[in-house]
Image (cartoon, rainbow, N blue to C red; front, top):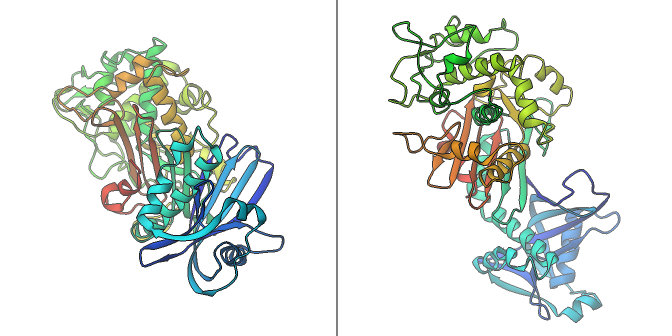
Length: 493
């Protein structure tokens, strides 16, 4: 069963009152039963608030009879929806129901004055009616919010068959969506930890895997604004402990820009950046760059002329991690925290250095990782020493906050990144029109960043013209890419 959070200004933190209710999806021969208010023209899914001592199932049976005169049997509860507005959290329980007989309508005086009556209309017509919820934003926030609620519920109902297979592929899955009107929704399902029966909620932290590279690129651009680096200079100008070499042993002239865009000619070792356990011996960043361990068995070198080939490289981002640490004389995670996470007030986003998982485990909100056979990863989470490449953990909600701030930066409205830096990240790389800096480009206005590791798969997409954002995070390696696993299908836009 899925949970959807419709986020008002209060989100989880400030509501002081709650109201619960139940609603019924009743479909027969392609038509759905709705209530229609003749005076106002409003349409709604039958349902209403729980009475004292009443459970959600009993509520939906009572409300449907009172509003429509029909007796129904709930077949399945398929959705819980929380709406946050002002001081309230409204919780709705949605049931698929079948009609079993006739009862007696019991409309209130107010409902009689409004002309409430039941009507069967085609499911497609109902979807069309409720899909226009944003058109009522200025006329009535209550109507806009009610229609958005009904629209989301009907979409969930329609997608039960196709999306169910995707959701069931993962132990836990969490999503965040922002539409062109700026409305924000969370959706989550399943378990963060099967063995301990911990459910996924809006604060469950998932591995962000290679979305880390987007955050690293943001940090590098921030350091350029502080005149600490110039991305068009060779990275070796900023390295002292270790140098990036070419295949013949000379110092490479590969620029920071070329590393950010995976065009520096750096090739990862075979089957590298995978399988390190928390109980294993610590591997240093220099060990990775030197190719001295099985974690990366190939020395990081610029093996091709920079700019001539695209070669996706975790090792290249290890070079950037070392560069950041050397020029700031601070740990990588501290630099990112001060420049990105703290200004955005992110509480559940961090790079998983050796200490972080132990601290976070106490909060019971880190999603346990599972392999492609649904077996728990030894130690629950792998050790990721290459933080800049794939060590990020976060929630869809907080990744969406980062994406929102980036879109603000592209449009010159960010307090943490200037317009020039953000726009530079969205420009295509010479000879590779689909590659930006730490992101990939789709068309003229959409950016994509995604991750895939042994303990999870994720994806983030943002349109910096419309402001739409989609984030999906999971805690399983599905064994296939985002297109085949279904993540791309549920991204939204």
